[in-house]
Length: 150
View 1 (tube, rainbow, N blue to C red):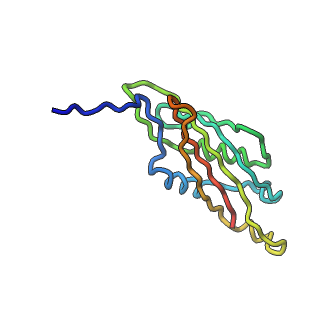
View 2: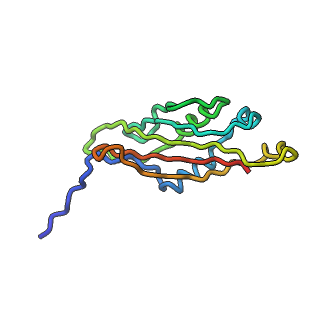
View 3: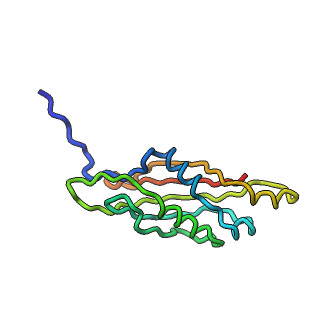
């Protein structure tokens, strides 16, 4: 008789329901490129470190690294705080999880004659999703999204 093996991870990381494709679709549907950043033609990467509570809600989100301004950080934080994750509660232990996400804001290359028309495009998102381990005992998941208009 063979005993079923125990899972080697007591605490499992939260996940976005539907996986990376669903997260990409969520970002695509809910991201709003700030008008001020569009007018200034501002591009860049916003790195967010966020905390997920034991029921799957994002309870805190902070910008890590340098700030870009023009509302990009505020939009990235708003988007991350609106995400909902699935969490397995191991034996009733209430755990706060920490993850990071990078959102790349990138404007399309356009001529000056069509510069005004770019404000009518909806953003598209190209995800670059990687799972990394900072240390063998502490797994970490990182998400990186590139946002293109056009």
